[in-house]
Image 1 (spheres, rainbow, N blue to C red):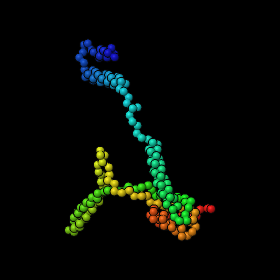
Image 2 (image 1 turned 180 degrees about the vertical axis):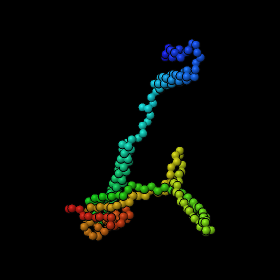
Image 3 (image 1 turned 60 degrees about the vertical axis):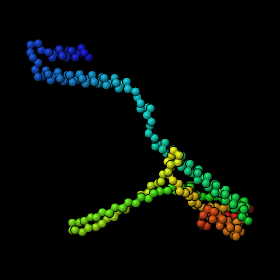
Length: 213
């Protein structure tokens, strides 16, 4: 590189004449090219020495992994609901078999959702009144009211958690009871009344059927 540069400089020298403007322009252009070549060589050497961290950086979550998590959440909710339904069914079987004339009870409960948690909220009401006037001298008053609810946060130990007011039981979509003895209309009425009061379910959502003998 140095020898090449010396040859270029020597070719521009004129022994008996002073360098003219063209010589200066050519010389400046060659200096610029030389600087670009040197900077490119140095830049490529430095970039090759830099460590590659791209492989160690955490990758963004793919759409497939998001779908997997959604499916897991849905499965957990379904399992939780199935557990609540089973608990209701077992309690009803134990209760109904104590009714006179009822035996060999089987129950199926269909819930709408899992338990609903209700949290304490603060209601913030804002009011703004604006008076507007038109070109004819008329005026009008505009009232704007805003409502905003925020969940109340309390501190438990080292954590901040929302203030739980109550946990609502899930709504029951329907109940099916199959048992011996409910072919008797009076016994059937006892069963329906018991289920309706225990689960707070209207009678039209309860089906009581006699079991095959």
